Image (cartoon, rainbow, N blue to C red; front, side, top):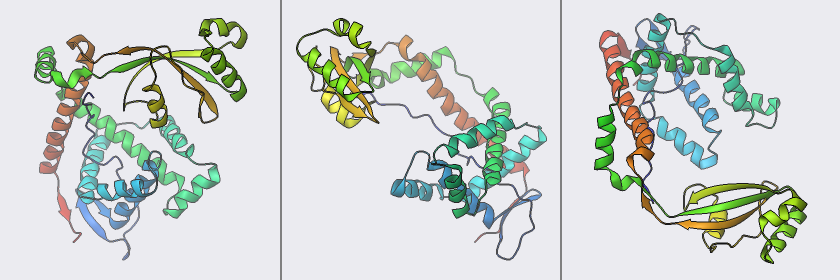
Length: 305
């Protein structure tokens, strides 16, 4: 199977935590960054908001494992965020409030109701305003990086070609299946169509009676489909169909049309992918350089043991 590229994410944390209240005994100062401070509460808030945002994709032990892995060098990440935010404020990077509210709405949709969302925040010692503030900071971080770092990044056609020539083995498409997919909301109709297809009738023959909703897709093994569906599809021979498969109360029939052998992709097919990959690599490198430049000009004192 073709090795996939992973888009490199920024090394800095996505949530810069603001400080507006005085520091009490139970809220120790962890670090000073120029004329601002990072407190233990900032560190705790970072973890709590991180957990809420990651819960959009992860659950249970997997969620906690990811959170714990991101605790490593957390204070340094928050120091870097604070430096970047200070630059964003100097450059007067504006926050689009509509985008902030849209992002909060996305998070809310993970919960059965507004009350469940509010309760989840309360368990972490947060309110919605905390989430909105941190997401606003996130947009400011992205905005200043777009302004200060992205212009430093350029990828030439020669770099793309050179990478392709040195890594051709990464651009071999695995064996693929060309399929027709029919979906149904009604299980009985799905079974009727399945039986008709099994008896030798063609999809086009059945379409006038059932107004079939069809789509054509091409898939490779271990890439796109649920494991149980994939197992059924990759046992089919050309022209064969699966029995109806239920996914979230929708019933699907898959018909195998063709088996495509593995093949080497040419440069024109993958040049955009390579360009994006190299661009992300350089973005990461330039970001680290820029953050180090900020650090050399900043006053930073770490007080946490």
